Image (cartoon, helix red, strand yellow):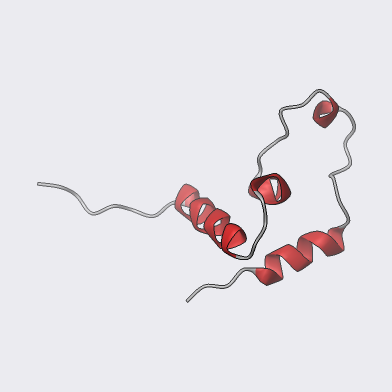
Length: 66
């Protein structure tokens, strides 16, 4: 017997990643919004997040769900 699949936070992240891709954004552009850190040396420096807040708001507003 197979138990029903439960949704969790990772399910939400997968759905949001697909929505960003459908809106035309590359993984490198929306990874930070999903909590993924850059795997570069420069990405480990500083405490300020990359990119202006208005760009992030625009990305979030671009995703659509049916």
